[in-house]
Image (cartoon, rainbow, N blue to C red; front, top):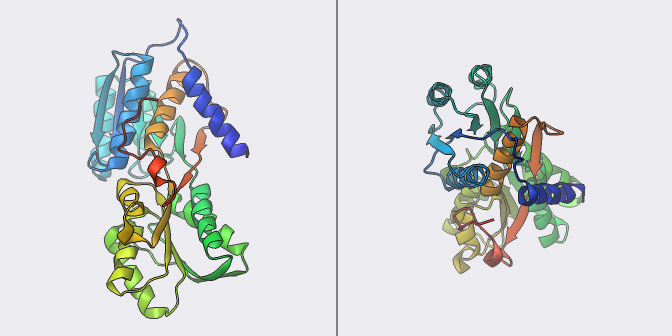
Length: 315
C-alpha cells in the first residue's frame, strides 16, 4: 500500500509541477543510454524529451547510445561536459566503473541522474522496484498453480536488477510450502538464445515442470520456444519487462504458455528522472537519492489495456 501511495504522489507531482518564475532554466540535457536500437531505451529517450520540453520548450536534447561499450559512454560524458549541458541522464554501462566520469561531470557543475540502474555517485537514481516485479510475477505462478507445483527460477546476469527480481520471486515461493523450486541458479544470459538453451536442459533433466519464472522477457520467449520444440505443454511462463515482444506473445494464441510479465515503464521513468533533476537544480533535494517505481503485472487478460513501450504517450 505504501508503494502505491508513493507512486500516486510521484504521478501527482508530475501533473502539478510547474517551474516557479525564479527557477533555473534547463537549457540543455545529455542522455546516454544502452542502445537506441532497443525499444526500452527509445522510450526512455522519448520520456526524457517529453518532460524536458515541458520545463523549457527550447531545451536542447542530445540522446546517444553507448552500445554497451563503457569506454564509449565515458567519451559521451566528456562530450556532454565540453558542450556545457545542465544535466546528464545516464543509464550506466557499469554502476561502479562509471563513477569517475560522473565525478568529473559534477566537478564541472553538471547534475547527473541515473535511470534504470543505480550509478555510484549519481545525484539521484530512478528505477523500477525490481524486488516487487519479481514478487508479482511469481505470485501469479503461485496463484495459478493453487500453491502447489514444481517450478524453476531461470536466473540471469548478476546485476542488481536481476538479483532483486530473483530475491522477490524466492520470497514469494518460500511462503508457499507446496511449491518446490527445482533450479534457481542457471544463467540464461538475459537473452532469447540463453533462455532457449537453458530451458532445453531443464526439459531434459525434469520430467515434470509446472512453471518457469524468467528474469526478463527475452529469456521467456526463448523458454517458450524450447518447450514448443520439445512439445512440452502445461508450463506457466512469467517474466519481467513488458517489452513489445512479450506484449505480442501475450496476444498470440500460439504462445499460450507465456502468461504474464511484470512491466517496467521507461517513458515514465525518464520523466521522473528529469523532473527530479530539475528540482535539484532549483535547490529541492529529494528525500531519498533512489526512487523506486512500482511494476504492474501484464497478463493475457489485461494486455489489451496495456500502454506498452512503443505506444504514443501524451501524459
